[in-house]
Image (cartoon, rainbow, N blue to C red):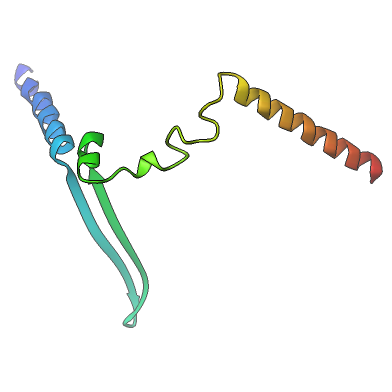
Length: 105
């Protein structure tokens, strides 16, 4: 049974992952679908796996300008609980509007 346990394997995996994140790994491929020599669909796939430091070093920093991922989000400055309060206020307003429509219609 001890021969089945290979402690160096996990160490090797950590080394490989460390090298990939440090140096980066690029996977690129194209998928083309043709029918009777007519191109119907082309999908280009590009995948880059690296650390954030390496990505910024090579000029990739798209997440800094994406409002959904960065502190540039309009909700980033809210204190804990403020988002829930705003949501509750919106729901009460919507409930009031639907009740008004229900009585008029």
